[in-house]
Image (cartoon, rainbow, N blue to C red; front, top):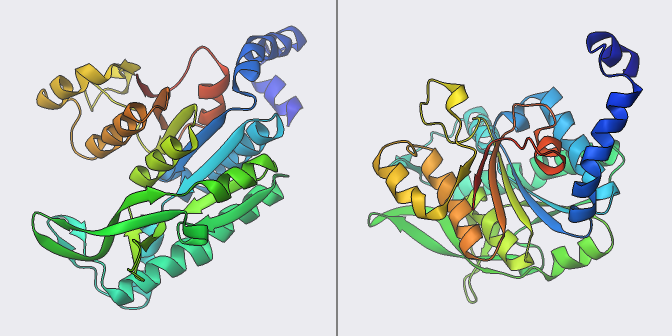
Length: 297
């Protein structure tokens, strides 16, 4: 592999390799011992090569002493399973209606398959990983939500995070991998399907994380959606309403920005939306002055 890289990049001789490491050293020092919550989804979760890159990045961070918590979604896989069992998807005001049968499938796919697949990949890369759902040790509690007064079934929003189980795992140098199925509030025995972005932001707040990163399938916030060179690298929270009003933050980017604002207002110093389609984008963000994607500060 090293010979191939040198052949394709002849200028990356020993001096350049050393320079890269020296430039990364201050970032190593800053992040060691800190908690970083990563929301994992999008193309980085579907493409096998990109998936391998993400796992390698997380294991590297963990190996040098950075505490990574990986929170994952799984919308496409849930859709595939519903198709396979002949279950028709129903949407209310643009959101999936989750009846009892669909909730069983959501729990099976997220906690029974995807979560363990990710843990297995991390173990293959040499990491120490443990899979959790929001149900384990009462990690996530949720209440039923409605959209514009319409019933969505077993769809909930997080009302409480009990991070003790994650903290215990981090203290033993494990990588917690969290699927976002939640328990109901006290007295409610139901399970709820939770938006993974929002759950990740609330977990980051509860853990006192230093950084919250959303791996997505877009470069970040673009001034012109048709021009990837129009990336806005830094956005102050105070500027978000105007960017929404101007239509620059629109569509699927709105809830991602709102999750960043939620984490930032909850005390997380750094929140980012980065392009999971870029190989090793997490390392680029963590260990270089180039950065990648959009930071909300």
